Amino acid sequence: MSQRRIYLRALGYIEEDGRWVAHCLETDLVGASDSFKEALVVLKEITETQLAYAIEKNDPGLFFKAAPKWIPSAWRSEMRRPFLPPRTRAVHRKQNTFTLPVPGNVAVIANQV
Image (cartoon, rainbow, N blue to C red; front, side, top):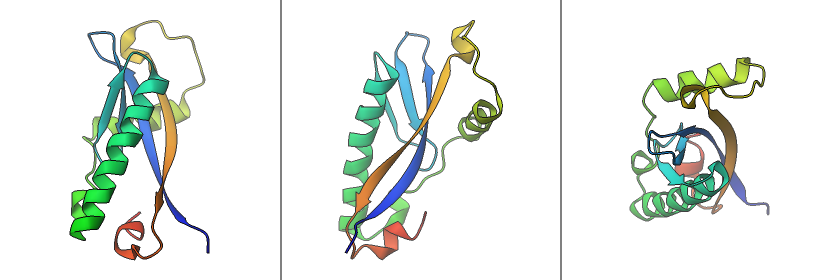
């Protein structure tokens, strides 16, 4: 039996302090680090912890929480924009998707996506 996976989207951007932030659109969780790749690793770890807690409490509401409206809006903007070298921190964004394994007996959580 194959293991189910949740597919999540993350938008990366640089904060004013110069650190990269990876912000999940579906959970409103964030990871931060010196690079987007490292911020995504931190985000994935935080997301796995939150998913385990939601499963333990049998409450999908503890996992799924929409990010502020500007995050999905920025994601869509990045999808339409051809790649150009960033000129300012304001447009220096990246996007990525990541997946999390979900135990087979946890339909309540997995079916929310």
